[in-house]
Amino acid sequence: MENYTYNSLTLQLEGFKVSEDLMYPVFFLFLTSYILSMFMNIGILIVIMIDKNLKQPMYRLFCNLSVSDIIGITQIVPRLIADLLRPPSERLISYYECAFQAFVTQLFATTSHTVLMVMAFDRYVAICNPLRYTAIMSNKMVIKLTVLAWGVAFVLVVILISLTVRLSTCRTIINNPFCDNASLFKLSCESVLINNVYGLTFSVGLLTSSIGSIVLTYANITVICLMSNNKSLNSKALKTCSTHLVVYLIMLFSGMIAIALHRFPQYSDYRKLSAILFVIVPGSLNPVIYGVQSKEIRTFLYEKFHAKKCLA
Image (cartoon, rainbow, N blue to C red; front, side, top):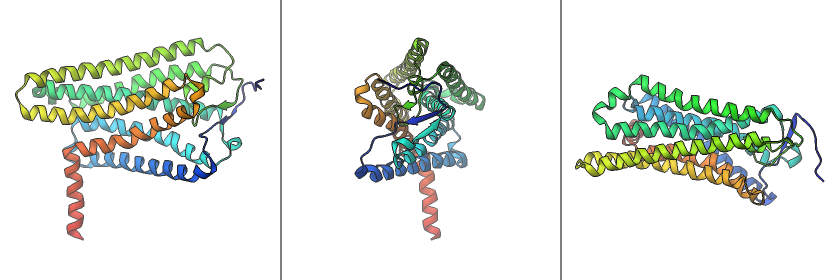
């Protein structure tokens, strides 16, 4: 019979179950991934800020993705790494800290979609309406798109978490390596029908808008490229759009796997691993993919390293 503890302000994270033999290898793997991800995301932000050739709207919008990755990784991974070295009984977290982590986790996941949606709009204008690109994608428009991406995500997530924290709790164990909305409302013994309805509407609405905007954008871009005999335009479209699409697909599939596995308690270990990979993998790969594909970023890095070699 399950023991109930009502409205406890101290919760216990179940954490990531690792055998003693694998504890330190997994610890150093996550630590290395965290350091590399932070280094690359902060590095690409600095490069975009200091290089005049990277003041284009595409790169300024991409900064939002790096900021989102930094927020998500910083909020989740350090705590996860520390918990690996603690026994399960000492993986304690306050209810308010858990609610805040759930908010940041959901905000990170949501902005991953909304930012990529506004980046898709930027690519659509650049390729389908190149003569008016500068006029349309002005500084004012970039600011509006940035506010829209973060504002919509913020409002949706505030409602989501507000519906969860209104519930009284009767359990204290978070069946996850970190706090998210689903793990938090599962602590309650009250009816969570409203949470499930809003959560499902939220997820379906976000995914439908996200996938729909990406499909429509790339369908229009494909039509323009097929109708155009401009090889330079087609080459540019292929490079920039393939980069954006790869980043989007990595984020989409890793997120969908984590959401789907929440419905299957028997696969809890796989769900935990997929939830961690959703945070680490896209955040680590995004700056690498954009850095490799971007001629401007490659040129900047080459010039800096070449100049240092010459001085040496």
